[in-house]
Image 1 (cartoon, rainbow, N blue to C red):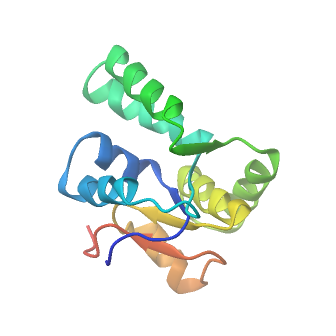
Image 2: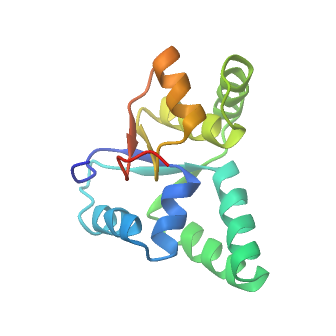
Image 3: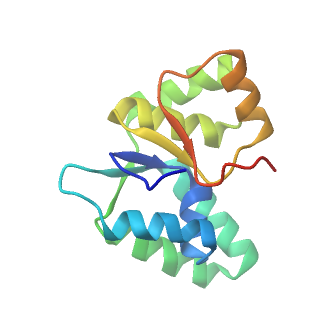
Length: 146
């Protein structure tokens, strides 16, 4: 994938890659560092829960709270908790065989007019994209399937 450009909604997987300092996370870091004034970054409130949970499980509750605190106070990422997003995520979950977390990311992208960015291709999401395309652009930091 070429460098990220434009307004994006980052899935928790993409944010976790960034927070963990991985090679894929480097792409997100570079995007943050070259963010243009007309570009905005979003994530869903559900993603914040998922990020906290993963960091808590892999490191500690204190570490998770610290990282989520820095993320939410940075002003770089706008956390969407709008009712419209929640309703759209529910509609997607009703219609599609993907996780509520993925639905939340895609719904946030739709309601903010941005593109959805995931770390890697996941089988269920890829299957749904083949079955019927989503009405938002979906990008993957890693192009290979796991």
